[in-house]
Amino acid sequence: MSSESVPAETVAVELMRAMTRLRARLRTEAPIEDLPWNWSHLTTLHRVVNEGPLTASELAHAEHVRRQSMAETLTALREGGMVAAAKDPGDGRKVLFNATASGRALTERIPAAREAWLSAAVSSSLREEQRRTLREAAEIMNQLADAGS
Image (cartoon, rainbow, N blue to C red; front, side, top):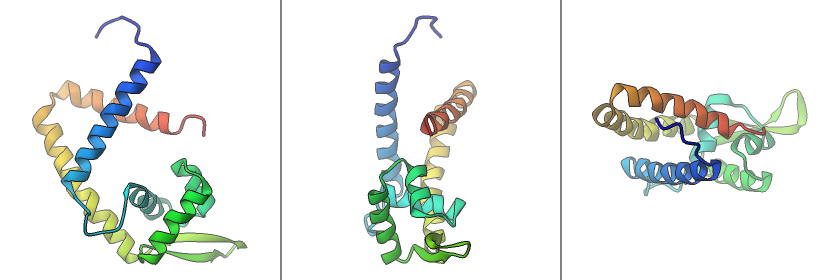
């Protein structure tokens, strides 16, 4: 490692490029052309499966999107049978979203193929030191995703 200072702008650009390339590669490893779901649908569904039941506002905040965008995503997921809506028993003005059995099955199927490819790539392409660095980078990326929240 060099002790030379790296401008934050340089890091940001390189990180965005690398994330875009990796995300595109992951999409090719488990194509979902036969399904109407895009990346936003899948990340929202994954969050509902793992953290639900949640309101649309909670999901919009967690996914860093406008409430209107989240409403569109949830409408598509509801129409596709991936999530169901129900009144909040504690506050009848709120609507809570839960994953359906079909939604849970989808969140298991697609990531499994992508994770299998990524695990094999990490195993075959990276040294142990690089694996540790990548694990630390994942923690840092999660920290960045939550910055200012």
